[in-house]
Length: 509
Image (cartoon, rainbow, N blue to C red; front, side, top):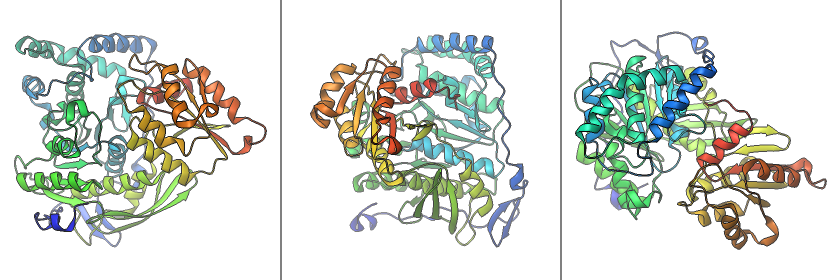
């Protein structure tokens, strides 16, 4: 949150549109209700299973896409994705957009926004990255990953246009740029009402940023990807602020505000200053966590937590969120504020509480403190930087009472392994160091040496792969003296979490 002297430099614009007369809404005692069906209508159909032949075709296409420049090689320009969108007839303009940037919490918050919007009977497309198991996870439609058959079909439909862009550019389109193109084409094909778009990296030059979002969400900004985004919080915040834009045109949709809105999570004061300056520069409204909205209460509950949230439109109480950790409570407040701003709920007229409760109760966030086994209790978490590791450690400490907690950890070579391990040291009794399936993974024995400096020799074990590392962790957890209070957490990178999901037979989500 900005310091008091900083607040005098900015005008905090009302983040909500005034009034909803003439729209398909009803203001009741419980809030603002969209008259598009009842709560019982929010039932998700089971996704159609892909055949072995369809999965084989998907694997071929994935290999074809992966032959392009990877996501770790960035050429900062929107020129290529803009050219592709133009050739495709600008599918990115066929739906409303809520865009989510930030260092940590993007995926969980985007998934909560998606679930909330669907509880209000909107057809929603979701873009997240990276994926845990299958590339199709990056493109969600109606609450499920796009079917492999549709992914392959849309790629083949847009492939000639991608090749046209390649031929006209000095640099061919990257894998990520093509995936963004497939996402927006799939959303137009569906069609959807709203896209919830998680930024891949940064903001200004990220390929997802070819859209003009009505609501731009910026999660906490920290030091990550410094080789591309800058060495300071100020520089990184400046990149992420690029998703906050001026309104391109006035919408006739009475359920959306007349200006673009920035929803800002809790921030380092310098990051907040940069983000607020951006809202002033482009004339966007702004609402800040801790000022215009906040998570007021989080009580530990079976399978998650019970929340009270002060939203932009009023108080929302008795909300069950099936996700663990105080950081998820804060993410939930941001998600709710984003949906309130999108629908134009005004002060004193909150969104329908029953729909809000339904949306949060159905929220999922695969790979984020996800329980995959009960005996011994086993979680997996995709944290991959010190900020995420601190949130994971705090959640484990607050929500659980393990007498013994064993970590299974594999971290990428280009990540701050010392920072991650240091953040986890206070909650882990022992750690089993291993190596995930990515070529970017740090050598297990090299990482173990670093871990011994942090944990001490007697608390560190090392195994060459995840299955053997988990077996070692189970042996430690099943020690007769403390078995009843033992747990395991598998973490260190998105790939580590994805490998663990596959190991436990979890379906892509």
